Amino acid sequence: MKAVVYKSFGPPDVLKLVNHPLPQRSAGEVLVRIRSTSVNPVDYKIRRGSIPVISKKEKILGGDLAGVIESADADSQMTKGDRVFGLSPDFTFTSKWGTYAEYATIKSNLLARIPDNTSFDEAASLPLVCLTAMQALESAQVKPGQRVLIHGGSGGVGSAAVQIAKAWGAHVTSTCSSKNMQLVKELGADEVIDYREQSVDQAFKDNPFDAVVDQIGGATTTQSLAVLKKNGHISFVLNENLNYAKLTAG
Image (cartoon, rainbow, N blue to C red):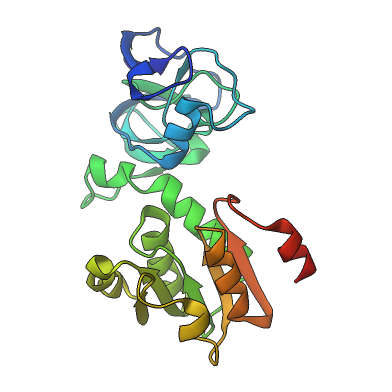
């Protein structure tokens, strides 16, 4: 099969299109012929060596996939020909496999069938960002009727979080640049502010939030904590640029 691999960390040109052996399916797994994948920030961070626990051995990047089942166990919930999508755990740290390839193996319980009205490209764009958004909202203990602040509402995780939080019955406030404000409103946000023109600690100092989803860190975290209710919850997506001493001190 064709696959995109790297053999050493570095800039984008370390990625090479090569002929690669097919992955061998184990019991409980299915073999998927990949029709579409996506590029997420974690992929370029792995490629350039920004995640220290990842070795320099040859690796296929990518975790999102959408495609067609090629083979499965006789008792599998998935069958040959099913259109499926999901997030392969192989994109993380220790495996040499990934989804920038024509085929991948994955446990069938990590896949879902693609709705008839959804394309392979659309389906492949969803798994990592939507799962991250759901985990962030669950970590922030978001409940119906609560006021939730979601930073970066026009990004991949942010745009998913806005829609999911709204579907859960929350009142959603989001930040983005001015050019994306209309998009974020269309996604369901009740309030949208341009972070370049307003800081949230000033805009909402008298109207704090029950929960915050912070994908930025640094000064954004400081501002978010200033408008978080005393017993509120904040969820960090990146865990970068955080002042842990300040968080510990409250």
